[in-house]
Length: 185
Length: 43
Image (cartoon, rainbow over the protein chains, first blue to last red):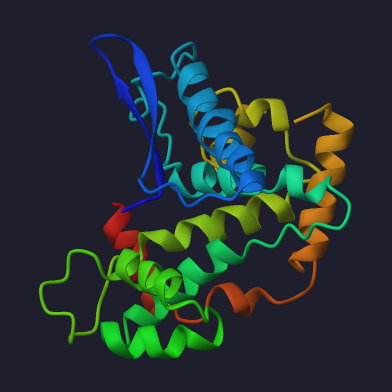
């Protein structure tokens, strides 16, 4: 469902970036995607192996890090855009995923598809936003969805709010959530 | 992604572009019940 993912084969120790075909990324966006997948997820996953808490998260009472993981990745995805004059690093994809997740709890597939027209005029793009949040539902006329995509925006907002005191190098040292990062420092 | 100074400058631009420092907390938590469902799915 995701346009890009990273899979890791523990037997060979190799990781692979999977890009859904047909590749729909524009030229400028692919670098941001690589910053998301390799510059964030792969880097944190790789460094995690060298930490004392590796595979001992319960022992050290470490929390779920998914919001921080995805929020950090989404933020890093637009860093190049931010530094390119004339570009606007909007977190609109994360925001749309958040919006779709929330309203999926109140609307059917078709209702949500129609509702999101105000934000996404392209039907193909809009269909993908709705499909992503409605995946797994057997009856698309029912309300409900997969709400975990809200973590992208929640994580990004938390990181950006704390950016002035955040240990960026520490953020890259493993798969920790923001709260556990503070405990470390 | 360049050096740390540039990176931090980028974060400031991203924050400004997305109105992060403005007092709009309710924008990101429109329904506590929805947030609870997210937490339940992540657990």
